[in-house]
Image (cartoon, rainbow, N blue to C red; front, side, top):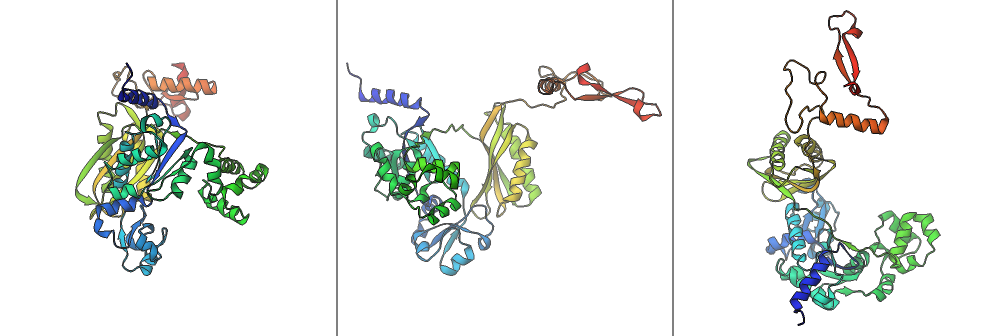
Length: 444
């Protein structure tokens, strides 16, 4: 008896979910993603000139334009322009403050929606996502049908005009798929087969390459403006001018380097929040609130003794909007102070533009499960040994387990452990050198 189509689909999906990369990429790009989300929340602004400020900037009079609407662009307003200059060009310009918490939540919902179509997803930037499509022919049909299936899945989450404005490119490798999406028009996806890859890339501008602006300007001075011209250059000349970046650019331009879509392992984030009774903007009050939220996060039942490495801190601002920063620790930690210090430093560099009405800390990256204790801890198997209350824990008693492990590691690295303890010998001596002595930790 032949298997039903649904059974075949489930079996194929089981095979696909075991994969972590996909050579065939489908790139979804929604230009001015953050501004479009703001217009969905405020549709009355859709017919006006609107500009979104850059996140992390100061007040509106000193900020910088991040994204602009079509009407504002027609008036001469451009991204990166100072607000004062933008208003002089378009006096009716409406300025919107960024809400990064809302944009991040929208991206997570979009990724969750696309996860029902393909398990291999790679977010590139806000509004751009690479979707792995290897093996999808048996599930969804031709490449055009695959695009239709992906866009239909987004209709359950996003308004139809937003989905219709998406630009779609499908090609071998993430670079070619991104180039295809950027060159596509809304409602007209660009689908590139394996045999058409080189001819498609030849006519694309060199600005599509992941090179710094200085390298692009140097290519223009050399009259190199398309990927086809770059691909025909000899490799030694590119190495002489651009080093290893020239080799990579040539391989991308010739379609020789195919970077697959890599499924990103995204552990479920842990979040702790605090609703403030009154809006706070003073630094010390913000630090105290941060300590309380970190204590809640460390006590989260789902943390399971995991150390925290990546933290996202933010909150809702007074009079609307939100503020958000991200901190990635060099070493994962599971105590409040090692977590709070880099966050305070980042807050000092990028403070909230206004007072905060709420504060949250979200852990999105974790280290190995650890139980952090003091280096001079004397507890064995979780119980602290009894010591004389009048004694000094650093000069008397047995060496703790953590300190013994440190001595053992130093022995392996250096051949000896240059660690000593101060031992009281003759405290009443008139000669200071006789009062105490240094005793190697190896002697105990």
